[in-house]
Amino acid sequence: MAFLTPCSAFFCSFAYRINILKTMEELFHYTWKHRLFPLRSLVTTDGKPVEILDSGLLNHDAGPDFFNAKVKIDGMLWVGNVELHLKSSHWYQHAHDKDEAYDNIILHVVCEADRDVYNTKGERITQLVVPIPDALKANYEHLLKEDKYPRCHKIIRELPKISVHSWMSALQTERLERKTEDIMRKLYSLCGAWEDTYFQTLARNYGFGVNSDAFEEWAKHIPLRAVDHHRDNLFQIEAIFFGQAGLLDVNAAPQSHRDVVEMDTYFHRLASEYKYLAHKFTLTPMDAKLWRFLRLRPQNFPYIRLSQLANLYYNRKAGLSQVLECKNIAELSEALSTQVSEYWQTHYTFGVESEKNEKHMAKASLEVLMINTIIPMLFAFGRYKHNETLVNRALDLLEELKAEDNNIVRLWRECGLEVSNAGDSQALIQLKKEYCDRKECLRCRIGYQYMKKAESND
Image (tube, rainbow, N blue to C red; front, side, top):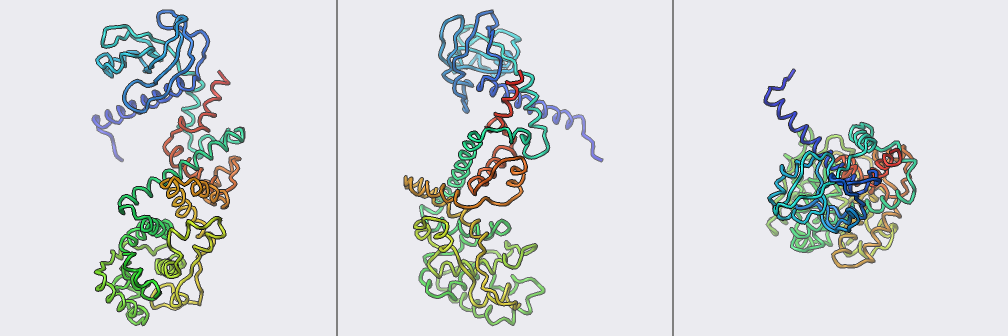
């Protein structure tokens, strides 16, 4: 059993207190921003009546907490910045009395006024005590401590449909914008080459989670301009694709399969062709150790996915220009549909025959590729080109696709939330990753509705 030393116990306790302080400060900012405190009978610490007309705009950078607030103090209208602290003395802890950026503060809002405060000119700052309502604090603490996901499950059925729809639409766009940022970073690293960016994004999603990193690394090793010279020859495309994946080395095969691989004619034909092409284009394969086979269904083996990609490329269906022309899900399905080459119809790995199967890309897999590759690329390309038609098409396609079936979606449905399409399921993934997992309930509109219960109960 491990015990904390006095020193480590002190720092753990200190870190806990700092975290609690930060949490309470965030709640206090939230209370002021949404005016979730009793607005009646507000007076300054020196007895002057206060009326809050506008709490101001929250500042996320350095400087005063709220800009352009409007308040009436003793009948006089003041417009300016507002600073918030749990205690008045924190003004001095943060050295605001020595910072000219705080000289234009019109009001210092605190939970506890434990002393007077002054700016750099020696002028006394007007202070207002605004306590965090007990019910609001209790609701927030409950959200943070709730183990069940989603934490706000108790109020989901009570939410107005229009509020839910508005929030889901915002989250859906948020998720697409986050994916757009990833795409733009990749585009920048590839010197503005959209086709290469698309190919690497598509390849990554061909890994379907387990092999995503490996497929992305593989795509970086594929010289598309070189492959274009052999685009009419499926065998040569497979040779480059498998060779660059590091899978045409006998030592890359599992120890138990090396004997049958050594005897496989197709393996040796591919390896021989790759050796010639590698010399021609100065190719260097990736490390085959990156590939994962354990706990994968044979249909998802890298060999199968690589052959499907080779077929897609061979049939001129792998380019960004082709998918940009697709207007609906049916056209996208046709563009992305693919199968394996003749050898892989009777194999899942080199040297081991299986029952013949063309191994078409399953419908569910195609939909995953649309959600994670095609739609984000349409959205990102549309934003980049200022083409609202492509941006709106991306949003429409999400609504045309059925909702994903995963644990996140099922849990929200159990709470009573209606999940109608892929746009909704993507919104819920964004909600979980960016809000629920980070306990950012104060930034969530559902969290806001939960916190509003405090105001109605006050």
